[in-house]
Length: 380
Image (cartoon, rainbow, N blue to C red; front, side, top):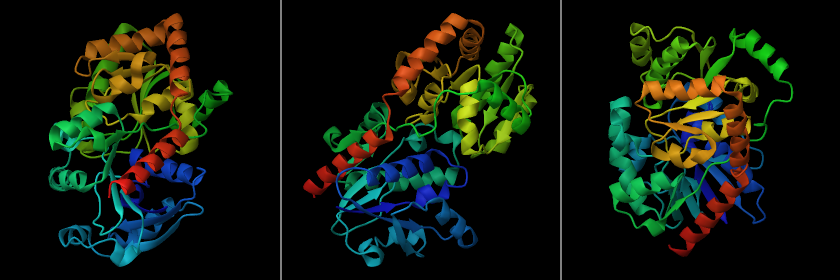
């Protein structure tokens, strides 16, 4: 099977190693390790000249070629319906893994749609990006022989908004990357975090891109309630600044909800399991997620989790974490404080989380993608 993989979104998010990058990288690495022979070729479509070499470097995966690089502006490529065969030759399957799908004449068409934030919660996203997604994602979904999404929640959303036959949509969960496991030397990890990020106290952790749809404002408000309840640690917000960060942070500071909140900026991959492994609790109380990789990553590292009882997070967290109303700051604070102060509850949730996280592997994810490619070829 010859696979053409649109790695544009992966390259563009490679700087801060966001969810799109992790999904693309782990999927490609694990597809190569499956028993069935698979020839993979990446193609990129962006025009950021001076940053291009660095972006391509983030997608350098042994055994996978990148030579199908087009300089045509993305808007022109899609507007003129230029087929991938013009610059990439013939392939059996063309996969658009980041919501959009290029045009192709003969290849089976597969697209991954992660979530419909541009329809369900556009107010927390850049207007131009929302407008582009609202225009381009629906036809990509309808042209695809197979639509992949990352949760049953997102599958229901796609069916409802795009009126697509649910039998054409396959929900495939993400996996957990190697190295995400409970700490072998928690004391050494605490010292490292203190030296690197200046936090020697206990802490509650959020790890991910910092932007409004992640409900960072609600988490900071809840943390101030925790402080009033007697929690003496910090809140670490670990990750790159995302869309509309400045406006969001100004609102947090204006409400004086930034007390004892630490911004780390981009976190090196080697520090991620350390942060998860020694935090008092991990929180992901987003208003909308397509999947929510940090939830299962935190569980795999032995962190007890508080997650929003909303969107895909209810499904992904299951009974292995404490679920809360993302709009209820008091409930978020109470749940986090319980995990930080009740050792029996904490131990129970850690054990549940470790067992739950073990169900998610990138190898299973890759195998199900390969099955989806085969189904798409049969439906051409």
